[in-house]
Image (cartoon, rainbow, N blue to C red):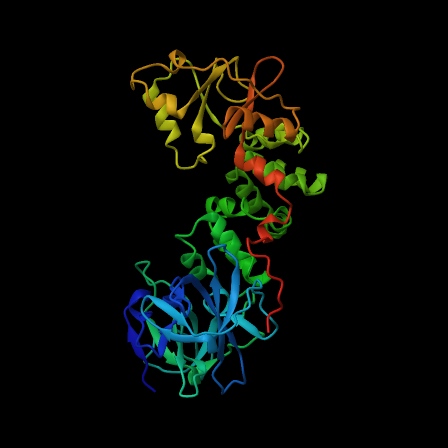
Length: 451
């Protein structure tokens, strides 16, 4: 039986054929419009149920992310139209309870994409033969199609050869096969460790770390760990910092020890210290021993402070400059995209050395003050010496009052000898003030059970 072989570009194959057919990767991110015309959220995934081998999987609903970042389940019976730029719903009750998959349900992007499948042998198609009758492929995308009964079913799969790239590093050609030729895609196979997560990582590429962290929490455990292992160290570190501590430790402790140490090195020292403080002391020490000493030293120092103090909240890597630094250089440091807006708002001026714990602390300069000065001016001429400082033993209440009193989002932490130890940013303070489960809480706390 002939297959439709297309160019490697996934964009060409996820193009929507018509209003009754769509590739799921194309649906992801589309606006969801309510019956009154209001934009209520974005499509994030499609939920299917697997049936017997000869029956096409049935699409039972969409996972829709609301503006509050809560993900809910919308039954396909509520879908009126699927258009190139939006999905429109019909009138009816929609449960606002947070989506969680049930046994027998699978997310297309979260579980099916990247699965390794068999396709009935076609000697003209690319791939590697694992037997006399089948060829092994990796799923790239899934097409769903509306039937006359209004049910949506999985109709075709877009796949590429399992062994990936050609001699020039190019991905293998993409082919599209009907469901009737697919073998080995069932509940027992989906999400097993053999299946990659490359396509899902690509799907997350343009998302903020906090949004990726939120999406990861919706995945099955095995799939979540596969994605974590596929991400590079820097990206995984950024995402881990947005997860609750118990989920951070779950992922880090399931990684190989050397890989986990590399990820901890890529994390902000204060976040790495928070994560390690959740582990047994012996396990934490194992990770610290494998980290680069230059990266582990500030983490060890932070672990000596109580978590409920300014020392426990601070980062040892704010913007620290010598007095002779020019305003132009200071602003260049403030433009560092790796810094949070809070840490970029204040520059701390010290005598050498400028690595924490620094030489004598001289004062600070707010970014607004820097913007009012000539680029050639030295920061020593604009330094504010009147702003109070925090002590590493100050309580969370004291830190909160400090920010409220001086209308700041970042504050210096100085020891009794006048050395700058680091800075507390308001985002770290908020993480501490909010309930531990704040990432699970939404603005609309509807507990109605999903039908």
